[in-house]
Image (tube, rainbow, N blue to C red; front, side, top):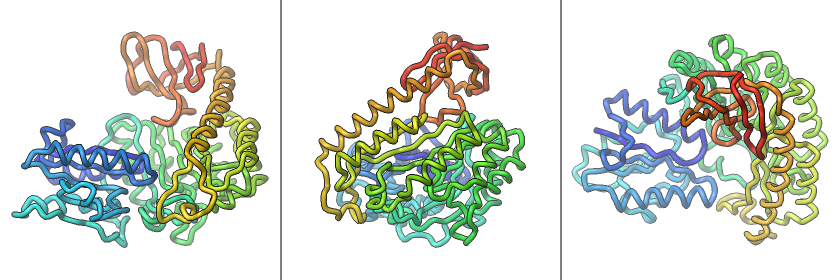
Length: 438
């Protein structure tokens, strides 16, 4: 049987999709990139915010309408975890639902589904108490020179606006040995950049009562694969990022001098209502520590605008903070009123047009800052990972650029694909750099 798997949402979902794909291949199923040729249509959904939910529902509805009688439609991922069999009311054509916490059971679900004589939907919904056990690490096939490793699942943070704890369950770290096993497998397959991800990578080990476990995990990874070129760290929580982690990042050249530090806002009042770290003196000190240890570090952050009761004065504080900190990469999102979250019940919900207007103002300011930062690189040399080649142009990423969320380096000439190459920066755009080979 052949399967077609559509992945929606964040890189953490992509990791689960890779795991499901590998389990299916090991069981004798064949992957296809043509939905019309598949026996199994699997949609790994996202259920985080309204736009993501709408995209996932639309994809399921389209497949349900267009599938052939011989095809099975399986809803996996966060939307399935969040709404369970309630999805059947929205999309009657679904044949099976499997929750995000039970994706390692995808093969047994399909086997049960294919032996049924009726078309009553099969459900794999109750959460698994052992999401990460010794038998679960899956050898994932690398489709490029970059791969993600999810070091934990779930979240135990109290953020008032976020539905992830309800969807994913409490924070659970993956065993260190399983992470090292994945590391060795991926690097042996030619992966040159590993990206550590979780809802909060800096909380690694906290569910086992061991604080600040990310730095020794990084050192163990680097010791196991000294040939690894880049190790990138994403999704770090400002309240958990330690001086020890900063020292480890600065001490090892394989660790990209790049950090993803979602701050969500810059006004203490808003942050308190969000139930996020709100001591801005500590935040400023943390950023200063990062830049002192790694002067060339690229700092990426995200902000939410239009949170309930956000005043113009509070929003102005965010703009002033952006101007002061001059971050390399910034994502700005409008607040999404998510059901079953504390923030959804707060008074002072703002009109969507106010939220959109504030997002636009913040992004316009950041575009100016980003252009100014990029201009400082003209005349300098950078090492890039070449990921696209054609028609006399190569496209690459530097240490400053995480896949899909950050900028690119546009290079004159065609360089070897999936290789590192030195380039000299000759121009700058708002988000991207222009270069020539050295």
